[in-house]
Length: 187
Image 1: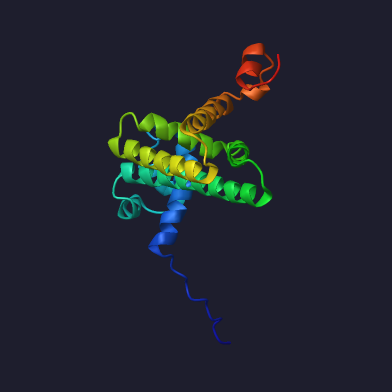
Image 2 (image 1 turned 45 degrees about the vertical axis):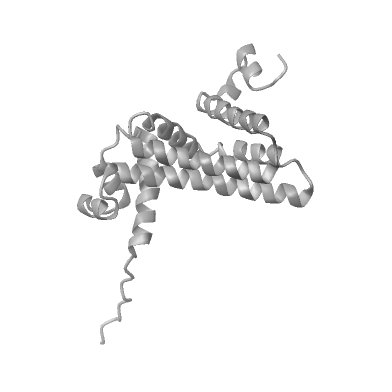
């Protein structure tokens, strides 16, 4: 009897491994926060050694920055797609992007990553810079796609930040006048 041929083992590329690490990091960081999560937990969740984690992301801050950029990219892509759909349908671009953002906030991990990124931006200069860069790109996209004046762009982003806070505290589940006022509902 001849031995059964084994399939050649497919090795992951560094990019594939980085992606797997980012997915694992997203999970553990949203559970424990950026500062409260040791890198050993990220490595374990990704199924790699701690040493290999640091080959992919030489510092914890670099891993955090990669997550912040990934989060920013996802929002940017969502806004761009919503704007394209709105233009195609002859709909209001700002409104369409706002509705797309409300849907995006249903992903609790994305919301938590944003909130943690904003908190980390207060103490980690590189995270602050990545956060600023994300906002720069978003503001430029919203301005370009909507053609709205600066005061409307500011109101759009202010509403988005309020949506973050309301989502974080699950305000829609609160049947009280203050929550209804903040959510724009009649009392």
